[in-house]
Image (cartoon, rainbow, N blue to C red):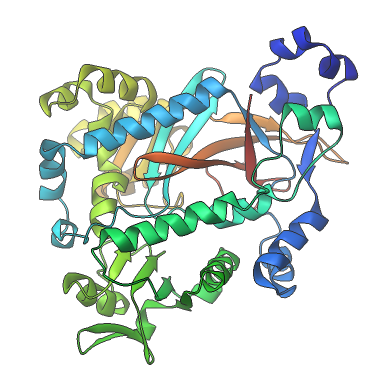
Length: 433
């Protein structure tokens, strides 16, 4: 806890940085009873909190993360800059020419819900490490925001406990209804399928239940389904006898290439269902090969990107390049300053910090479709624990829709990447300072 002097002296408060708060502040924490009530009220089912506690014991961090308002503003500028680049015909033509054919199919006006721009944030600045087009956690973080507890009135005045007014749900519903309206539909949205492979076995399955309940509260029939449970028959996508209007797509089969995705694939190409997020969004934003383009000012200039947008991206997107066997010797020598990621990867799978890779892994990287990204040091948060004060890393996810940031959330972890296996770690609210 910060001292009373810090809380009562405006001049002292003004000198505190977000980094100082991440090292010393235990004034706000997750109140487990409030979290349980938030989850139970969302579902009307006390079993969901039990499911989270048993299956995901490290889903929610013990305390929040603090980010300076300057860094939060910089993240918003990066999201807007990326959006402006993706809107350029020259960029779209270049990227889609190398993408799977389905990525060139028109998505019926859908912009795609829940983009996740993932940043490393420290006192030195911000770095956009990747973009996701089916970013999980937004609904869980909305529940988490309602479970924050301040230790005293002065702290609550400094950091108003936002997110407790239901505004997040309203924004989410507006987003889904906006997708449906943009498709040109002449009637109201009636049915949604929340789709992932073996959804009940997914780590974030509790979030699927929260979404299902949210849709139900707004008069929309929602089902949770494996893609293999859907059929495309008589020009309609169905689950059993239910005709599906919109698929909320949580699959990591981004181009719908798996046999289990065939019904969605065919319905999407036939214009029989609205799919969000969709393959085109993944190709334009989330394929990590795009980071090599977004971090290269010369190539951006050749595409017609204005100088001010290039400056924003140059400052925030770490230099990234495709791994080419012809450059193996140079990249090996530089490896300690690089992070290696599969171009189509997700969730930290098969990613390697250069100073940890072996010769055998290096051969796998050279043979695979990898990018090499300059290392950006993550921020650190000291978690106040009854037994110890562990130092955890964190990244910040900016959830965005239509080029605008809707909310921020952090993920606290130990190791190379976020893993939801760290005591005291997991999703954390972000407070700007």
